[in-house]
Length: 476
Ligand code: BGC
Image (tube, rainbow, N blue to C red; front, side, top):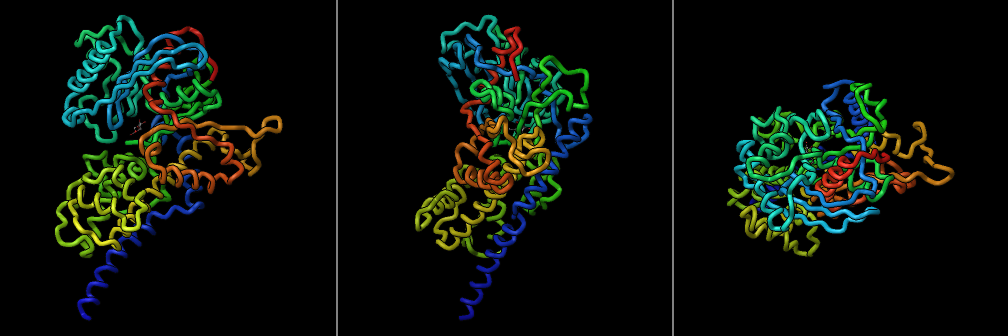
């Protein structure tokens, strides 16, 4: 009897950890609306002056987007997510991708934290091998370079790295022109090509979206990291008034990962990322949303449950290895709808070395993954609405709740979207869509369409390489 009582107390302690997490991660619609407003304000501040906000609002020098008339063969390199890609894209008239070859390669761990020469040599030699395998000609071909980190551009084909994010950390590369680093590595490796556009992955995705549909006004990435870009009017970019270019519009790379929403209190698990290895107090928003972090947040919660209680038994060493639980595993746990949560049991055993976890504990494990997923997806939805609000596409008419129409027809807004977390995790998508409806209301949400752009980051860079080769200025 006494033993049963003690077991119940221990169980309740584990439940209390989960309840506490749930309370701290709650994001009711009213809170999300406040997050939307703060991010929109930060975006204004970031456009007003350099360093005016933690949200950097980087100018990309992109004032021309592909319009479907591009033709020819182009190459692209896509660096920044979990794997790196080399692409060859053949374009025909009328928004036709005749052929697209994409090669994925994992980046060896040692290169992620090694030297910039090693990293860029690896990329250049991968491109060289790819061209050879393709039987292709490299001579003078345009090369798009997708580099998915914050960069200060000096032109469309050059820009210096402001800081690394996600898992990357090669200190001596900070402040260097990354296009030049790649160009030099191409020379060292005997590749006769030069970077003619350097773009963020959001910008690549926007380019592909725009290529297919000119109503595309913004692009979002929800993968290993998270971010967005959108088309801004030059007269709204106060920090560079007068310096901007031809078309009257410029694509702005928001870098929303570094946003720190004042309404959201960090959980003790989020705080674990505030150390030297993880950009200290930077990238706070990204750390609550993106693929590099979600699995690790869950592991930290499980570890706390194991410290407070014996729900995982006594052999809990597996729980102390950082990043042992990947975000795809978190997704698989949440998606398991078998009555005995068999998949959950399997993942706990195989990844965390926790055998024979009882069903009721597995249910708690699913709950933890659900809470973490839900907060991430809802915050991402709020950020998307902030962009729409910034460009006046959130459906409101001058701050009212009226739906915008054009000659009586509701104006449609297309947001291109890419990233493994969004594409590969249906529950995440459902929560995100649900939150969009909660914030915007059903009628307005129906005018916003999120269009997935497969391989948008890299393909878009090839398209921009094409667009910037031609002298014409396309419409934006
Ligand atoms: C980077 C962004 C990038 C995003 C998505 C973030 O960590 O700072 O530049 O777009 O990840 O990959």
